[in-house]
Image (cartoon, rainbow, N blue to C red; front, side):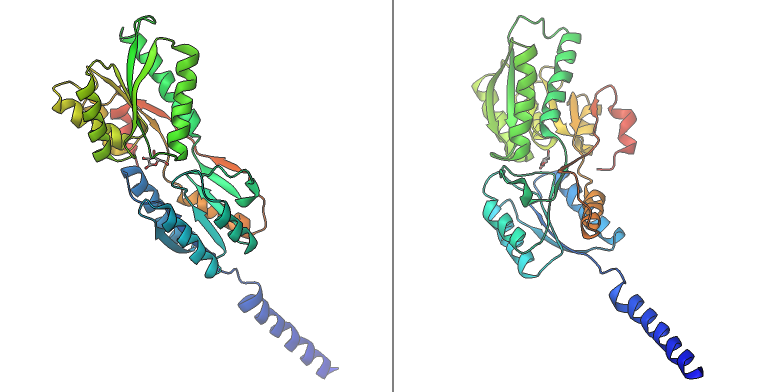
Length: 324
Ligand code: AHR
């Protein structure tokens, strides 16, 4: 009998040791993330959020910066697959051209989480979820704000033509396509007298935004509105407008997207009129989704971020609480 008790005790102790030390202790998640580059204040804040919150979530992050090249992103994903990571995070620089590499990830049973920008592949089983903003809605919010503002200021009487210069984001990217779409939906439905007279890509950077705006103003200074697909290009455009001897925010109404600190400073100086928020602090949501996937949960195809609209009247009060 004593022998039986001793054997049973040893078995229980042994089993407890095996379960806690090896089999049932949670394995650290390894996540490979392909960031598209560092073209804007917004993007830098997004990268920081992803890198910092990896520590909070105790995730092993393999970070890769593609420096604005899709082929670098594809190579990074292939290297993540070769290293057998648990999850892949991806921000698609442009919408098209992702099918083959996403199918390789699927064949290797590695789930992909899209962050911020998605792709135009028809087969939605190629990614687990997309976390980020609704860019069409952002474009709509910009046009709605603009409609109210121009009317309130007596700039738009609903009849006289309102000339708009548009600074588009990176050609073929989801935010450039969708922000334009959202803005034009409202413009076409509610403002028949608005006209986008010039539209060109400033690639989401201040230097290119400035160069495009310089060319626009050289062609024609009769413009009432600049619609910029991000704050960075709006900040570049502001410089071009000032150098042309005009007052940004007064002679030309400027509305842009993101809500970075630089935009708030410009709004408080009266040089930018409105920014539609686009939240770059996506790190915590990315890792929560990765953990959920590893726990076998199914995620919704789209996880939205909550965002506001800020203008000259609300900028100063909101500024101290801005995190990016
Ligand atoms: O995809 C989000 C966009 O990309 C932001 O509006 C822009 O600033 C960034 O570079």
